[in-house]
Length: 176
Ligand code: ATP
Ligand code: MG
Image 1 (cartoon, rainbow, N blue to C red):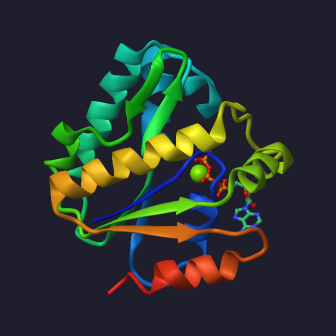
Image 2 (tube, helix red, strand yellow):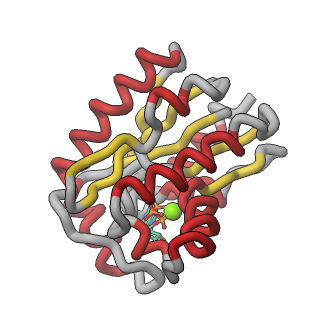
């Protein structure tokens, strides 16, 4: 499995859409949303992070177990850490990471002002405007921890404004 991570609005989903090949892209948030809609009655994905942590963790665990059964050629679109009103929490806790065979951890990012502008200009989503630079810094710490724990290499891709094709090409080169 390849895990793609980054702060909200970094461009994960957009970059993954540009990839060619027989990898199946799975969005962790979409899978969690299905569960949270059924169990907790929430309506859209931007409400998810406001649920009590215990409920988020329950849905997160069910998804982790389903992912352990996914075929080898899966790309997981997810978050390194989630910024919630009660603090940052890991997107990929070790107890889940150990269930999966991870080939590479890919972190997609850009400079904070670009990320901020992207969030503001994306009408399809309601993203928080928390401290993006701090969240990005926290994420890189989580990324290093995931790499050390799993033994999988960490790759950082700068998805610069207007340079989407370059980002896609860098990601594509990781698919073998
Ligand atoms: P989330 O974690 O919230 O799902 P994401 O990382 O998947 O966010 P996207 O939805 O892929 O982010 O992208 C956020 C916005 O940024 C979109 O409007 C997308 O079109 C735009 N975007 C992505 N990459 C670039 C780029 N290189 N240059 C300009 N705009 C970009
Ligand atoms: Mg996305």
